[in-house]
Amino acid sequence: MAILVYEGWDWAFDRTSPALTNTGFAFSGSAAGIRAGVFGGRAVEMDGGDASWTYTWPGGALGSMSFGIRLFAFVKAVGDTDVIQFRNGTTVLLQLSQNTHGIVRMHRGAALGTIVAETGPGYMRHEAWQYLEVEMVRDAAVGQLRLWLDGVQILDASGLNLGATNPTNIFMTNLHAMDDFYFANTATERQGEGRMQGLLPTADTAAKAWVASTGTNNAAMVDDPSGFNSDTDFVRSATVAALDLYDVADLPAGVATVKSVKTRRVSRKDDATVRSLRTVLKSGATSQNGATAAQITTYDIFDDVYGLDPNTGAAWAPSAVDAAQVGPQVVA
Image (cartoon, rainbow, N blue to C red; front, side, top):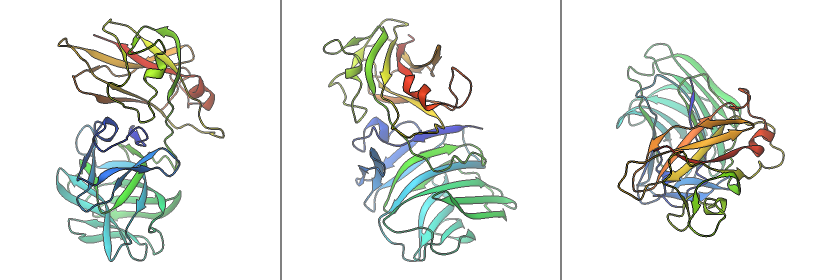
């Protein structure tokens, strides 16, 4: 069991940037773009009828899952309007909907088919940010569905017919904005309402083996508020094992609980040699290597998720996050 992804889209500045097209996410339609997030930063919006968003999780179909997402509905539902579809490929298996009275329903099949579970009225609101969390076990006879909205449980249903096929992705359209998304591959991983907080590099450290594209301040080359400015400024290295670590900004005042830390790198190669990189996270005296990834000649995004502090093996303390360092290392 594991959290597979956390995403707040804070480092996205247009619909084609790597932070909108990283592994597992796909956006389509000319109106899929960005807007201001509810706690600052950025959020994804779909403000036209052709816009849609898909998250396909790694490893194939799943019968058990948990996820949370902050939603903003632009248009008041008339009748039932689907909010999230559970699909296998492009085949719609299940649909969560809202309706005019704020009722949230789970339907089996496409076109808002058979209602298998529903809440009472007055939950989902129009033109307001709300945090929806889902725990689901897909089964044709003993399916389970639990829903929370803004931390309050609004549905706990079991013995459901949720169909005979496991989904491979979730799909969203119908004029919504979204932020602060997480997804786990079991139905017991509800995280509770939270927010994704991006922290940018602030200073170089003693581990400084890469070269700045201009000047000598490496951290200043990789502190873009959007997370990606193509070749405007960057750091570079062709030396195997070369490591560049940076101090990062502190968490906002008042943060008491950190549920996970994710490192993010946007990188590419610019020669014809096979190249691979990894991101290193240093906490205390422990340096944790992220996944090694081959590089291509266009920019791509690479994330590593750490549910526990590698220096202690325990939950992250805010002070440990503030003191952590992060940066790229050449593997080959």
